[in-house]
Image (cartoon, rainbow, N blue to C red; front, side):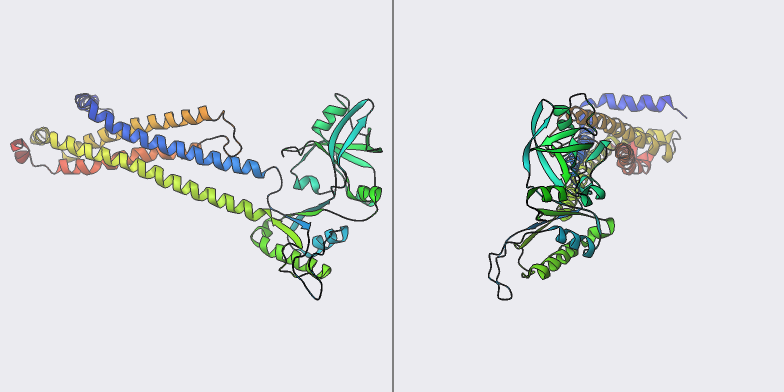
Length: 407
């Protein structure tokens, strides 16, 4: 039940000690403000890191040929290891936990593309059908390269949105032919890719490119994504792939330069673990800052109880129960911490909202989860109750005669 007399007394006590109440409330508001800002900054770092990794598949291995630096089985160092389509099939069939895989060859590089009277220079990337999964590319029109295109050496291509805009303007590009370095390729699809510069490409079948150049089945790299079960075994997959290729090309498996294998999933896991550690550290700092404010409230309530000892004695002498005294002090404590905490929460969220317009590579969308904000508010209320409880219990034990004698 709402007790107006009790609230009038609380406001009267606060008004008599404005500076002290303000400083106490400020310490609590500052604590929750700092907590919200730190949590928002931590979330922004996490969002930024995830955004950087979403350009391509993060759970993946990239294999490239290199040059031996160790002698092995009577062979001198300095041998070049050139990967081929056969190695692509070998890795796909023998290495466990591969989800999607592609091989690419950069023999074309940048080429002049022509459609009617429109000309533009874009990167031409020969690849395999799964390549768009690894690039996180989305097909917006038509389709991507498929297995039939690979087997039949078809002269088809999938183009990025900038290529479509530059060459075709508002015209539908599907089933139209563009000239790629003197060879006509039929457009079978249009894609969009979140990676920087990855949209400014056209993809053609790897086998078509190999036949058009020198007929050799060379590939520059083999790129494979890892399924969920393989994420914790990615290092074993690296060793397995290196062992297979070492046996085929007769080089020392310990020779890391012979075949370079990048385990991008481990880099992603390390960065995410680091950010999780930062998030835990932020919680610790924020809670300690908040705790300092709550302790300040408790100390202030102790002083208030001491100053009102005679008043409390009079109350008990005329029949006030210990529970009513405890509730009065606890209610005052909850009110101060609750209002201060909510103010700090609103200010913190407001600052994060203002910062949301800033967009940096590793700092994106600072925000605080709604459940976290509610939890922080409840934490303030509980902390306020605890801050006032111990002084209130002390006040409830005051004997009326002793209280009336106190100065």
